Length: 103
Image 1 (cartoon, one colour):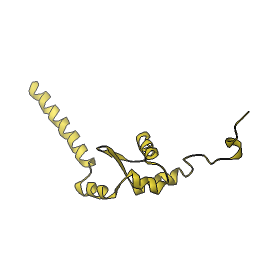
Image 2 (cartoon, one colour):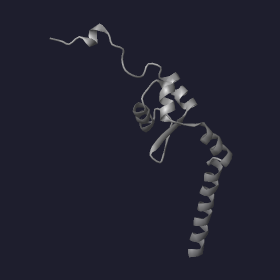
Image 3 (cartoon, helix red, strand yellow):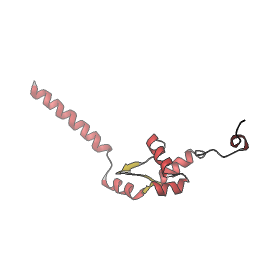
Image 4 (cartoon, one colour):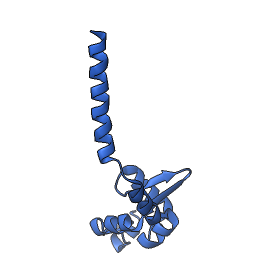
């Protein structure tokens, strides 16, 4: 009975290992992604936002990015995709109605 359980466990382990290997990126894909990574300072210049705003967008899941050590990085296509989907995000323009203080 114990031998049967061990064999079943091995089959399940192999099954999940095959699934993992089928969906994990290859080294070529990882190298290509690494070449596209840019620091948030560059992304901020592209997006006309601050690094803090971009790191907040990454942490909230609105912009793709990764934290490598203490630094957040993203890709230029990810920034451009975010801007295309959210063209009006950011601070609201000042209008006479919202700049005057109510008395």
